[in-house]
Image (tube, rainbow, N blue to C red; front, side, top):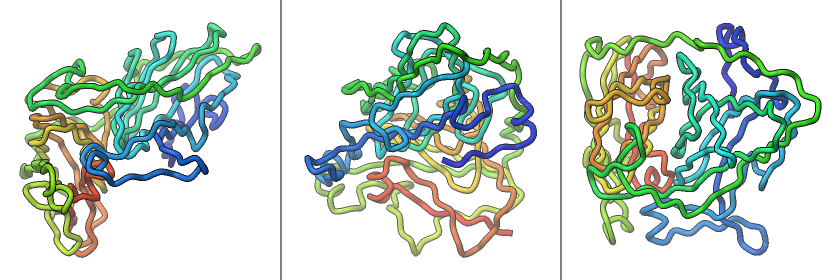
Length: 332
């Protein structure tokens, strides 16, 4: 994980002492053989759903314990799993504040008691442990499928069935007897670029599809706009200094976390509805549920090269490896 900081974020009264009250948590589900080696299977179910494990690693550790020496902790969560979605929350149901998304701080804290992260998504949260009681951060492992147009995740994060097959322990927090006092949560965190779709010079459409059976196993079953990834092909060319709308549509039966390199974007809407408060920050990965269309606003401000491309792809690793990926260049 890379921390990116600036003067504005450093000036906020937020936990900021790395390893003391500012804690990185990279979560990955893995499967192990009896000799301790990783198990990786390419059977059809794992190609279609993505490889999932039965053991949670957090920063490479199983079931870590953390002694809290402050009344508030800032947890920076990264879903580094191949395919599994997680619903994060605390074992006692306590609420916490989400303060950031993939690309940085939200404009204001969002109070909640759970967050869902797909592979590649990140979140920053603040949890209050001033009551002195031990508490555990848990992650319900989710498999998300379903028929097109289904809703079921609450808010705007709909589409698909949720199979809560595993509950993982992420972090066992044990407050120390003597702790520094809690901060006062800032009411405002950042000023973000205004979402103005009228500034876009064009709209590009990206349709995510996945085949079934032998077509999928032979390759070519995972596509964007009907084409599988080809290293020799540039799919899109973007002009530097322009703003665009990318409309991502999911024509498959699975949810796909769509990731774009080079830029951070804002979500304009999901099927015409405004995104939930926790999705209104800067992002580079967005979940698109079955039958859903999500519009994104992107600014291409720098880093031009007509030969060396950036990628966009599904962040389920088996899906991108099977072809659900494309390439774009930014030109001057």
